[in-house]
Length: 492
Image 1 (tube, rainbow, N blue to C red):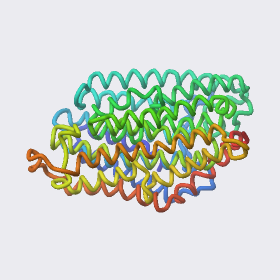
Image 2: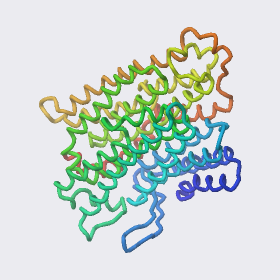
Image 3: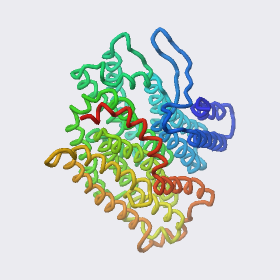
Image 4: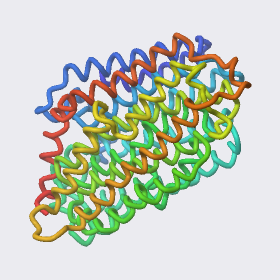
């Protein structure tokens, strides 16, 4: 089942290239992928570790095999990828040029993300992510808007450099393990933990992984590629990259860097806290200064990565569990917001806040959906983002609880809390400017979302609300893995 789930988007691309209707095929394939993911989610047992494991030897002499499996962390990331893929394909509609190529690129991005999250082999973990970078470049460069060519090259250069630094870190990680224990199997590496890698080596390897994964996740100051790329990308591409693919860097830190390199993580904690506060405070202020809806969402996506990095830096079960839940919640919310923004662009031709206003009168469904996305993004109680941020803040504050004075983690937590205020300011301002107030006469003939688009909107909103009211559904499957993998780090 898991192999079919990974290969379904690839099979869809083959069928489209063979002449099958592009949009219908992409919808069917993404629907099947989400259905299989929900079956896996229903059958998953939180206490059993990796499940649905399958393995095919590729080069046994080099310990290389194509191995896939799911634990709690990878399961929710695959669930995120499947849900956002279906929503992105549904919102795509008719493409004016190269329609087949457009849907092929969307499915390849989805295949790369799902394959990376489900891979238990270090080689394929890296290779699947690289598979998704080329179609991302094409989606922005061919079907984007504005200065799409510059944005496409910028994101490609940044992510390629980040991937190169990450590759160096992974090679050093592999070589630092004693020859008798070397393997590409992530399960075996996690079992080894950091016990067989000298602390001095951990310091260098972790820094490379932090920079590599950090570039991919738009960690400050390596973030400048993200806002321009998302503003120029077609809405489905922005949904998939900001909602799903960017989480690969965060997932990699949780999966590899923290459990395998606890000494390195502890050594560079101060640097990471400074960088994540740059995401939250500095980028939050920059977001307030934006006057375009797409740029606000692009910078907002970068800003919210700071909360997830804060949970990762805490390196305890509560903080990392909150970070993982926030990865899912942010992905769903930002995908919903980019989808509605794309529909506004199609109907009005502009996203300047000063040109919009009162759209809620002619686009009530879009206004309602954007309102739900806004409330989720600012962490309103009842949405998954709220419960995730609460876990992140308490986990980070708990990290220095045993100290008699304020620990740097507690100072960082207090500063990060101001990000909640900043996000409320720019998101509510954006919502008010676009959907409230006086509507210009030229927008009186603007049409609302099609009735068929209620399906992806309901999917994303329902997931945000369900996991907001029942966060224990995710905590139950996430905590066991983190409790085991982070024992070395939490001893700090």
